[in-house]
Image 1: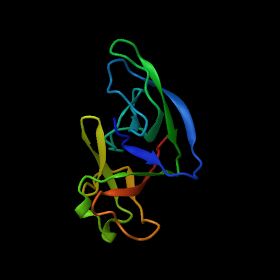
Image 2 (image 1 turned 60 degrees about the vertical axis):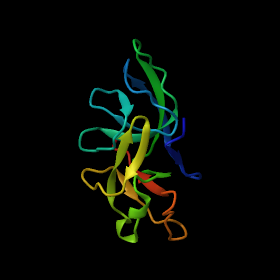
Image 3 (image 1 turned 30 degrees about the horizontal axis):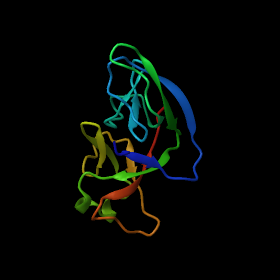
Length: 147
């Protein structure tokens, strides 16, 4: 399985172990996750209005269909810079820098929905060289926790 997102190197962040519910969607390394109001971590759609916090998985979940488990999550209240793909690469533009956006989820694949600015938890960042990868849609984002 491909990794959805990776943490950009050289940052400080916290890693904590959180509970996952039995029979919930598997959480793999590189998945964006939410801390639900129930206290369980879950595979995320990055809608900050409906969930408590956002982080990125650094240790896959251990739950099964019948037994709850745990997952290791990296987070930082000021945000973690991550790298991943947008839903539609051709839509990336300078005008989107700083926008708060959400995720698109298709099965286990998460991409940043660069066009959905409703209750987003992911900020589109300026690239170091000021350009966008309009072919592959790989870009950097700020994932801000609310923990």
